[in-house]
Amino acid sequence: MKRQLILEDGSFFVGDAFGSLKETTGEVVFNTGMTGYQEILTDPSYCGQIVTMTYPLIGNYGINRDDFEAIRPYVHGFIVKEACVTPSNWRGELTLDEYLKEKDIPGLSGIDTRKLTRIIRQHGTLKGMICGLDVDPAEAAAKLRAMEWPRDQVRRVSTKSAYPSPGRGERIVLIDFGMKHGILRELNKRNCDVIVLPYNATAEDVLSWHPDGVMLSNGPGDPKDVPEAIEMIRGILGKVPLFGICLGHQLFALACGANTEKMKFGHRGSNHPVKDLRTGKVAITSQNHGYTVTHESLSGTRLEVTHVALNDGTVEGLRHRDVPAFTVQYHPEASPGPEDANPLFDEFLALIREFNKKGEVIHA
Image (cartoon, rainbow, N blue to C red):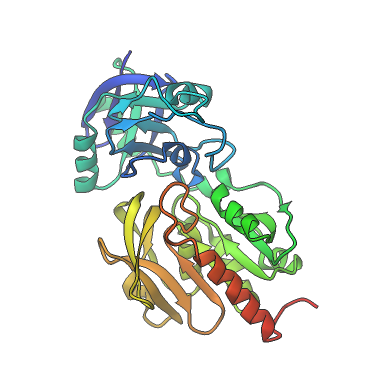
C-alpha cells in the first residue's frame, strides 16, 4: 500500500507502508547508525519523533527479546529506504514490520531517504505527517506549521513511582527523565544498589534515600521544559556526587547558570567523535539529542568544558570546579553503538569513593 510523508515546508514523499496504518505526526529527525534500530525504536529520547534511518537497509537481523531500551517504544513513526522482509539472525523473533504492527507505529519505506536527510540538514528538523494518499499535502503542511511542539515528553516517558534495582554496592539514585535500560544495566553490572525516581522528584526526595551518588538520565525534548528537575539539581549539588547523561547533562548546565539552545538538526547516530580535553583522547560515541549547552553561557559559571564534539565543536562534557559533579552529552552506555566511553561509569564510582573517603557522606 502506498502512503506518504508530508513535511511542514510543503514537500512530500510517497512510499510503501509497513507497520501500523494509522496517521501520525511528529518531529522528523535522522539517525546515521548502520545498525541498532531496535534500541533506537525503544529509546524514550525519541518520544514524539518520526525517525529516518540514513543507512539504506534496515531490519535485516529482525527484532529480538534482548535489545530493548524501554518497556515500550515512544517513536511516532519510522522511515527507511528498504525494510528487510526476511531477516536472518539466530536471535531474531519478529520482523521489523511485525514489531511495528504490534506496537501500532507507522512505517514508510521506498522513499529517497538521502533527499529527506538533506532537507533536514538544510532547513533543520521539521514537523511531519505519515498519512494516506487522500490527504492533500498543502493542507497538511499548513496544519503542521500551526502545530505547537509538545512540551510534556519527559512526563510521558518517566516512571510514575520509585522502584529499586537492588545491589550490594554503592547506592545510586537514578532520576528517570526517559532512562535507557542500558544505564541501569551498567550500574547493575557494577553491583550498585539503584533506586529509580521519577523526573519530578525533589531534592528532599532524593536525599531521603541516603544515596552515595545521583545519576541524571537521558530523556526527550527541551531541558527548559523540566524546571522542577533544575530546582532539584540545585538542591543536591555539593551534598552528593553527581553524574549526568544527555538531557541530564543539559539540566545540570541550566542548574549551574549556563544556557541551552535547540540545534539545527541535532546529533543522532553511533559514530560521533568526541575529544576528551583532559587527555587528548578521542572516543567514538553514541548520541541522540536535539539541544546543546552553549559555549558562551559557561562564562561566569563554575563549570569547565571537559569534552567537545570534533564534527562541530559543541560542548560534550562538563565538570563542576567546586563540587563532585560531571556530565556528558553522549551515551557512555552505548546501546546501540561503541562502548569507548563506558569507563565513565567507573569514573563516577571512583568519584563517590573519593568523596566518601573525605568523610563528606550525607548519611551515617
